[in-house]
Image (cartoon, rainbow, N blue to C red; front, side):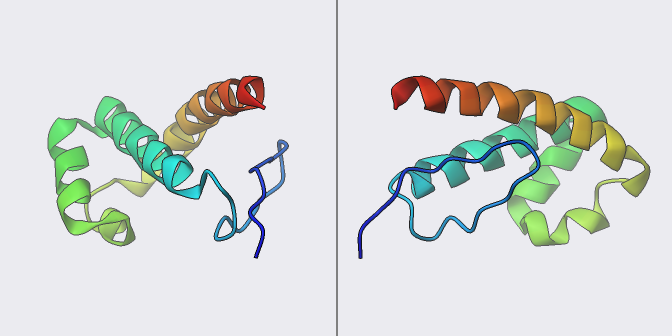
Amino acid sequence: MSKKLLKINEGQYKIISNYSNKDYFIKKAREEIYDCISSIAGLSVSEKIRQKGLDKMHLYFNPDYLPFLNVALKKRIINFFFVLKKWE
């Protein structure tokens, strides 16, 4: 099975199980999520979500903050993909 480079344009999604930079992308994406949560809801909330997992995020992160998280992640992820694109 050949590996592909991960390319995602705005508004698209990909299943990243077969990409050569999958592990790096997942690690970086999680770090960005935790950083954004920390800046929006505080370090204690971010740490609880790190400990319990993103699948338990709804127990600690106020859903009223989701629009803020979406905007913050979009800004950070766009910068991340810009850096990835420079590597190609």
